[in-house]
Length: 471
Image (cartoon, rainbow, N blue to C red; front, side, top):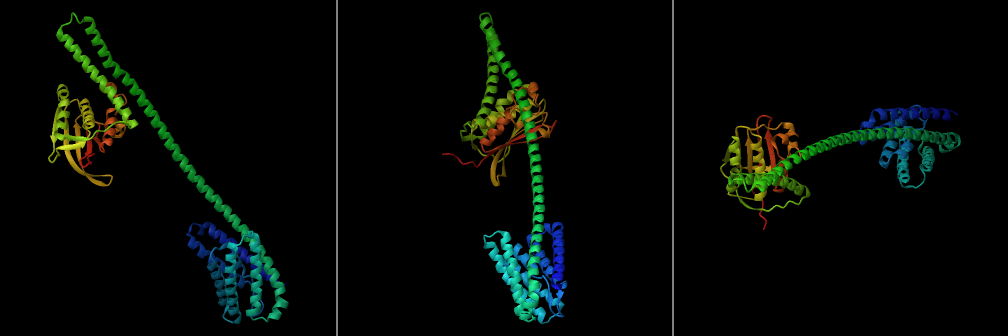
């Protein structure tokens, strides 16, 4: 009966170590790498085998009976690498040498090494077998206990007949029973640990999902604000457009009606004046309609680009001539600055380049009350999309009202200007910059802005010089 009592004490120590190992893993090792976790588990199992020996049944000065083989059973059931099981077996056998080197300790080392190899084979069998886990566990426990008893009888220092008749009838059934109990306790520990890990994983997943939902909510709120602002701008645009369209249209109708009703009595000079006003109002109306149509074509991807050689000198002179009279009437100085090294021609769409320049210069003159507007033409080498290229740069600089920094992006959006009500004061559809930006992109170029409120603005139109000509 002394064997049974000491084995129960062994079991209590093993359960205590298993609990402490679970706590150690839960609060310390869980954040470590997989290699560190495996090394820690090997040390724990070897240490458990050594503790079993310390609290084993001392048959005489050399022979000790204990449950040091139980950690090997745990290794078989938990590890996926057979060599880890062998390390546990040999490691437990080596710990027996800490009690001194004699025939019994050497026999114990041989026994545990043989058990380690056998358990490694059982580990491979478990991973390849289709039996239920509980059946495989029972088979492993039975084989390990039987092989341990046979090893003690063959390589141990106790005579085999005495061992089989007086010791094994107690140690083998008690060892099998306690091994089964410990295996079920360990499985319960593992299930609890798995539940904790599952809860932690679920909490982390819920936390990530919560953060993603919060981000999605912020994005949705931002888009809702953008839609509200876009709706507001479109409403203002429609209100402005109704005014902008009616004004020239009413002028055309009124002047045409006056000529029709009083043509016989009106002087030729008045008729010419009214006809000029009709033409001017018609041009304004045509410009507004063209802006709306151009924007629609760009958004639909149906705006055609016709590339050809453009004279850079002719391009700038036409732009200056188009606005010279307007600038003089407003008292704004109009200057052209050509930098050295300009190419003679540019391969692009002349109509669209002129349209962009006229939009930029028209805005510059419109928003400049006094001072000057300067059109500068230069070349520049710079990287676009990681490629060093040669570019021609048209910059339109004014001394006008300027644009606040927080409006630099919005003024390029359709239906928006630096101030939503600015069309009421200065006129226009608010589509010019949006169309110009899209046209520049279609020409493989871009538009950039430098401006500060009250300090004027500079718009830069970049167009590629090394664009390949289409045959």
